[in-house]
Image (cartoon, rainbow, N blue to C red; front, side, top):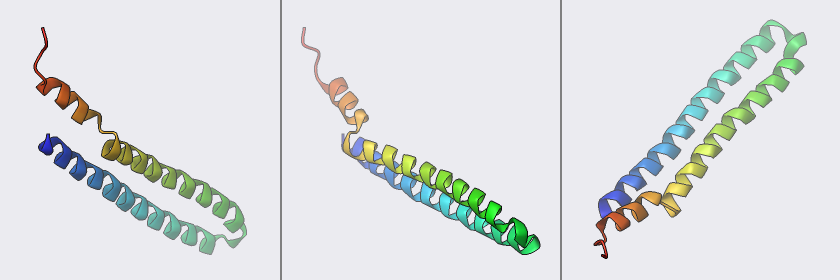
Length: 92
């Protein structure tokens, strides 16, 4: 049982950490491309800014979904219950 809990903790850490890393890289690329586009055509900057904030919100939503799933596994782990049921002797 301790193995399942330990592996779940590692999975939660990877889920949150890699999700944050991916969102950070994505936001960095998006911000750089926004600045390039605004520098090339300054008259389109307000439209590009609106679209950039929409994509940033969607990127952040992906990270929050990952955090939600990770917290579910951390506090209401269904694998521990399945293991507990499998290890109980069958009452006949």
